[in-house]
Image (cartoon, rainbow, N blue to C red):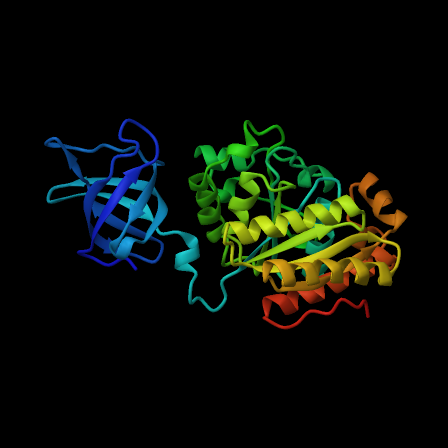
Length: 351
């Protein structure tokens, strides 16, 4: 995609040169970065600070977002070093971690609790798991796990810290990337900022098999941006009619925004297996008929008072009450997720 000698255009997204595209030549390329000759404007070199996000346009009209990570001023070679987006560098890699977003059409359906318990169940089944709390308005994964986060995604976005400086260890060795409660304008995080987060998550690829991203509920812009970069998107709903309607609305937005990730569905807080079947099948059939979307049914979670008890005790249900009905459901969802990662058909039935 990028090769030495290629002529590209670089457009800064911030600063005094915002919106102006500069013609540059690629000097060399490594696995995760590439170097370009520093452009000139009106006879002077264009000084862009490290951390500047840019839009890169390459031949045939293709483009991607990148970040200037280094500047070198040497005799005969003055250059910027830019990142190659992780979704490009991981293409073709045999063991690259899968990024899975967990979202919902509305709040209050138990998204964070489900994500935590599923992550623990995956870890117990031998997978190396990372949780990213990208619910930028009301991040609470660290609180639910009784962790004291000293830094967060906001520090990473601002360039104050890198991914290794903000991660924490959760139960069963899970890696936690804490989010930020009260994030200023959480609905207006930019695509460049999300790309920066994804690139940093790519640095964890040696240590994890799957990255679970807890997004904001609804169809807000930041939610859809994270879904855009995901390999798979999981929609979570409950049996309530308004939750089902909102879940379908989220699917419609995914379709309208041409997000081509694999899509899974989980029904939370059901009173019977048959209720789960009914809700799940109605959503799947509607998505097939009206949106031409194939939805993978990943399972359901029974209504279980042990879930609420475990939340109050700040401990995952699968650890506190491993034999409870909900914990068995979380374990089944984890098994189905593993099949999803292996491109196999999942089963809705709890064994």
